[in-house]
Amino acid sequence: MDEVRLALRRVLKRPGATLASIVTLGAAIGAAAATWSLLSAVLLRPLPVSEPDRLAVFGEAGQDPRYPGALRIGQDYHFYPYLRDSGIFQDVAAGGSWSLLVDIGARAQTTSVYFASANFFDVLGVRVPIGRGFARDEDRRGAPLVAVLSDRY
Image (tube, rainbow, N blue to C red; front, side, top):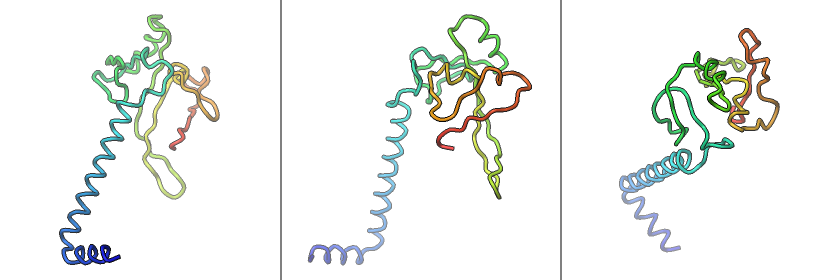
C-alpha cells in the first residue's frame, strides 16, 4: 500500500509529465492498433471469395489494396455486356459504388451504395446468409430496383 501512495504522490507532484506520458502511451497504442488492423485487412486475410486466384477485377487501372494480387484492367461499365457475352471468361460480373443520401426517420444520412449485376454473388462464390441475392430477370433496363443489405448496415 505504501508503494501506491508513493506513486500517487509522484503523479500529483508532476501533472504535466504524467499527462504527457498518458497521451504518448495512448497515441502509441492507437497507432499500433490501427497499423495492425490495416495489415490484417490488406495482407493477412484472404478475399472472401471461393477462388481468389482466378479473380480479375476490371475497373480503374492500378493496384487496389482491397484486391491484392488481382488483375486490374481499366474499363468502363458500358463495356460489361460485351465482356460478359464475349466467351473469353468463364463468368463476368459487374459492380461499382457511389454515395447516396438515405432518409432514416427524422434525419438523412449519407451511405455508400454498391450496384451489382445479377450474377455478382455467384461469380464471387459468396453466399447470401439471409434472404436472397438478385434474380436474373431483375438485371435488365427498366426493371424495379432491388437492394441487398449488408450485415454492417
